[in-house]
Image (cartoon, rainbow, N blue to C red; front, side):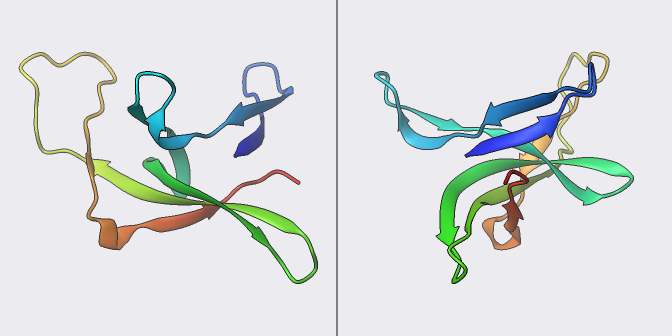
Amino acid sequence: MYIDFTSLEDFTGKCDVLRCNPDFQVNHEERFDFVNVNMDQNSLSFARVLYLFRCVLPSHREEDIALVRSLKASRWKPNTLWENCRLLDDVHLAEVFCTRSTHD
């Protein structure tokens, strides 16, 4: 899935590719990208992309949809903390959210 966005560094249009693949490239390792999700205006939420779908609407318009697993702050603390360290845990699959891409 291609995501178009505006860079906050130089305010130019950029494009990124989201991937989710249980058998990625030659080494056959999993590749599931992480995304920022706007769930709350006051905080930044993260999620892991599980599946990508392309839906064709009756109007013949195509919409790309991502099924994601939300992440929450972890209670676990490492022995060594560093500045801006954020630890996250998977949320149970029952709390999965769907997000829609923002490109035309």
